Structures are given as C-alpha cells and as structure tokens.
Image (cartoon, rainbow, N blue to C red; front, side):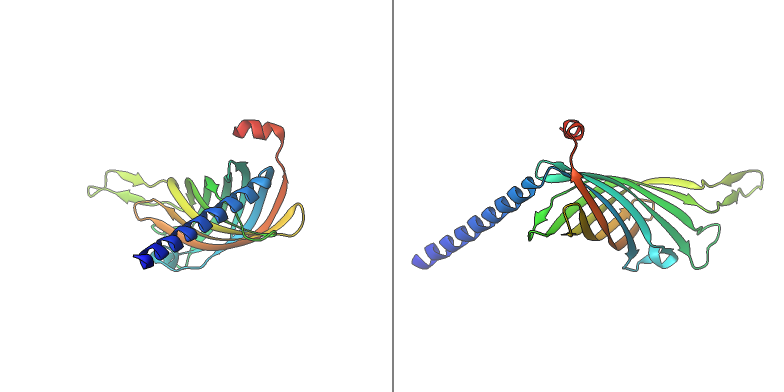
Amino acid sequence: MNFKKLQYKKITKIFEFLIILLCIHTVAVAQHSNQVFVDLNSGLSIAQNSFTDTWDPYPAGHLNVRVPFYAGQLEAGVRYTRFKGDAPSDRDSDFHSIFIHAGYGYPIQITSRYRLSPTVRFGNNFMVFDSFNIFTNDAGTEEFITDQTESEFAYEFALRNGIRLSKHWQLNATLSYNRTLTFFPLSVTRISVGITYAFNEPEWLKDFVK
C-alpha cells in the first residue's frame, strides 16, 4: 500500500511539474506577444514519394506574416513552387504551384533566444500547368480539353525554429509536411531556412485581431 501511495505521489509531482512548465512557457510568450513577425524563407523537398518521383520541386519561396493571438499566433502566407518532371508530357505537364494559407502556431520559449513553434496551416493550392490535354470521343465528333489551372484544398503541419539575433531580426528553420487533396493526393515534405523581421504590433492591428 505504501509503495502504491509513493508511486501516486511521484506521478502527481510529475504532472504538477509539467503544468508549471506549461505556465512558464505561456507567460514567457505572453510577455513577447506584442510583436508581429514577417518570415521570408526558401525550402527544399527532402522526402521521395510517387509524386516527387514524377515532379521535382524546385526551391520554394515563402512569405509568411504572424500576429499575436492569445497564447499563440495567427498567420497568413503564400508559397511559390515550380514543379518540373524529368520527362514532361501533356498528361504529366510541368506546373507552377501557389499555396495560399492561414494557420495557427503555439510558440514555446526554450531559451531567451530560441523559440520552437508547432503550427498547423490550411489553404488552397493553385496550380497552373504548362500544357493541357485534348481527348476525343470514340466517334471522333467531340473534343474535350482539360483545364490548364486547378485549385485544391491543402493542409500543412510545420515545426518552426526561431533564433533571435537582435531586437528585430531572427533566423528561422522549418520542417513541414504539406498535402494537397487532389484525386491522387500530392504530398511534399520540406526543410526551409530564412530570416524573420519583428516589430511592435500597431494598435489598429490589435483592434482588428480582437
């Protein structure tokens, strides 16, 4: 019985310790919640799958803006990627991708200069293909032309690392997984590196977010 009580006390202490840590992180973030962050980075695909085996993603350019929202951050951004195949055809055309998204992240203060932020994003992937397909019915009387553009829902999970260099400047590095829900889903895993500029949140933006 005494052993069980001792184990229960240990477990209780562990939970209390975790709650204290969470409160400390939340307070630390809240103390810096009056800043807006503008991220600019570029990323490379790091995982092969059936999609990236057919289309090779060029280095992506990503612009992202984050604003404080309670203990976390709301964000909105856009990423451009060029996808090019080894042997492009009308059926497997090269294309441009523009991912426009909104999301929410929860920054965790690890040290005074280092912050880790799990983030989830949702948006649309707009794709513009270099060429289109023409299909003819069996009788040869009608032609069907595929669209050169496509827009599909996409979601993304990201883990952003931020290292503060000065009052306004940071380095950022992000590991992300993006999935576009086409008929055959398109998945890309990236590592991105870039810079972040931080500035105090204007009063009009505080009112707008509230």
